[in-house]
Amino acid sequence: MHLLTVEWHSPQNPTGKVFTWNELEIIAEACRSRDCLAVTDEVYEHITYDNVKHVTLSLLPGMQQRTIITSSVSKTFGVTGWRIGWAIANPIVASAIRNIHVKLTDSAPAPFQEAALTALSSGPDYFESLRRDYESKRDYSIQLLTGIGFQIRFKPQGSFFLFAELPESSPLSDVGASLALTDPKTKVAFLTLIIPCLLVLMVQVEYVKHLIEQAGVVAVPGRGFFHFNSVSSESEESLSACHDYQKRYIRFAFCKSSATLEAAAQGLSELVDTKGCLNLPPPCKTDT
Ligand SMILES: Cc1ncc(COP(=O)(O)O)c(C=O)c1O
Image (tube, rainbow, N blue to C red; front, side):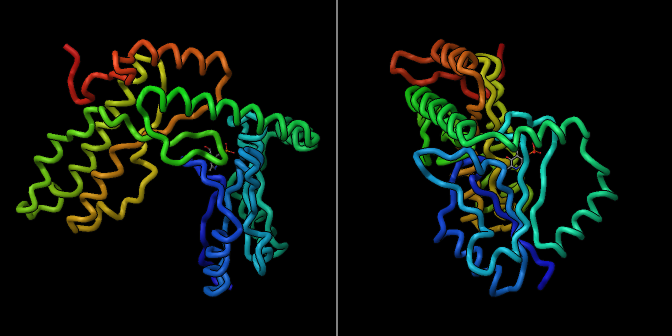
């Protein structure tokens, strides 16, 4: 077996995509044919919606020996600060992981380990109500965001994130400043490729900054979730892909109390224009 690994997470952050058996089979076949291991991150394994079920890659034929499952109590029990997680692997790999883990991190805090054990002994009712609670928060958040012009192209099947496309009316559709630097005649890769992408990030950051300051709502710029290959390539297509997608998405998290979600709805509703769309000032404009 090679030390080549495939890293995989489902349900996925930021889109909430839950991969099906057939989709996982593509990954499994790649691992089998190349004789390599897969490391899966299954922290959202209990948070799935619409009766969609999480499938672990290790269940696929020939994958039990090849899969290192990682997960944690963070998301299932709402204790992200604890950093209590685990890896499940075949005995040889598990022993190597234990050996490295002891030397690198020592052990997790004992009280948290005991609490995690209690949490993991929860009955099916706990997991069912967790799913129901988040599913209604997902639906509430989708309705809220789409109602004011955001586009949710992929309805999350799991996790607690919404990867939302900015409203069409958003001034970001006009990236005047960065387009000026994309003149195809310019031969300098730094100007044509890297600077526009950085500007896109800055523009997104400006957008989320306005959201925080004016609506009290925090979102994460989507740019960080995209592949960076486009920056290293000099092709026009890559550059345009960078502009087409990476500037348009931000990630919202709906793992909040109902009171917090309602306060967000209230904050956003105060910025809605007469057409019912979120009306943020142009992101690049400096306040005077
Ligand atoms: C896919 C994924 N894996 C792991 C983590 C972190 O888990 P933990 O809090 O247990 O370190 C996150 C947190 O955002 C996540 O989204």
